[in-house]
Length: 472
Ligand code: HEC
Image: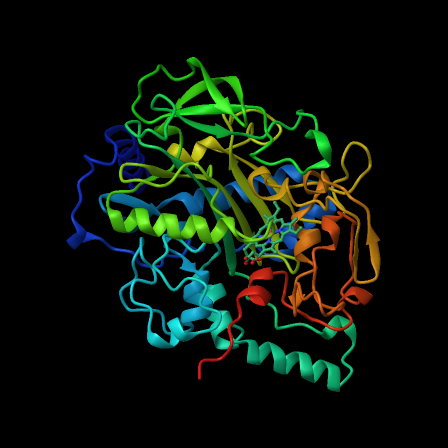
């Protein structure tokens, strides 16, 4: 009964808090572990495409939930007494790209780059020379090994492909890296910092956590909505001072608001136990807060610095699998009422413990099913996409986009990932890949002129963004 022992471990970690959980570094293990092959994964493409074509959306949602159950199941790895879920054991983007095919023998949950080699430090792309807590894009083994086998972690490979396509005037639809194998999966998790109740940075022992309300009006002033504009929050109560659901007054984005308390046990929470872990989170939060809107991030209040005794809590995760040619896209995020429709009512019993606190939406097509107003399907994660729309008019690949601060709230994962190519986000190159004003503009065929001078990277933006210059 691995799952029930995991539920108990997670409960213990939450209830007893950081100080009490048994720590025995000698028994720490952190080994990459795949989700087991089963009738749920990888599912044959014709079955998934069949569900899309026949409009059986419930079937695609069952598939997304089955993935969630497998990703969040307990792995064999244990770190500081805490059982690690399967997804967390996967390769970080730094392991895949900067370190390349020879990842360090001893992997480490907290400091995946504890001993960066000199070559890596001297590397012009070494954005994370210090230890990091997590690199926030993760690959399973199949995805990582595919990148290594084809040397797609090296810009020289992508440059050579790009040069060949130019030289040979390759038809637009064929200008692509090879497709990933059907068992490849990539992830993008997001965390929030919860202050320890004794910290002066907490609010009477509580930490404010804003959440997305789809009914909330757009923020004034034409700005994009995100956690800095949201008007509703919960108050996380790590000490268990209040009965869950107690109404308290807390400051949110410059106003006092009424919020309900929630215990730490409502989240997958990782305690920060020592100065090294705190330093890692600080470094990483700083790194991510300077990243662009399209980048992975750890969201924290800039006035809240990590301290020993705090926790980082899991808020959300993007998940994409290559079971279909265009990949399956699903995203999971925390909500105070996780069982409500339209995103939480159908969560199956196979999902255990804290992982039942997260809702899910998915995008298995750029055109289907249509929204009630006839528009293209929408799926976004509020912690990652609501702030993506352009606030000023822009011109991208010769196309005009007006200001549309709410574009992120109408976006579709697949529509944007379909645009992923190399080179990307190069202002000097009008033919480089870009996010198209985040416009959700329906089906884009593989021979669309948008792709005419780039190399498609099979929907994974991270290939274009993280491939490194070859080591000397
Ligand atoms: C407007 C563009 C855009 C939208 C919409 C978008 N993404 Fe992404 N996504 C990106 C970019 C850019 C990255 C690369 C981040 C990095 O590597 O730094 C990314 C990274 C990812 C990754 C990590 C693997 C990769 O591609 O590099 C996953 C998984 C992912 N997104 C899933 C989703 C899901 C699921 C949704 C919808 C809920 C979504 N994305 C919506 C642009 C987008």
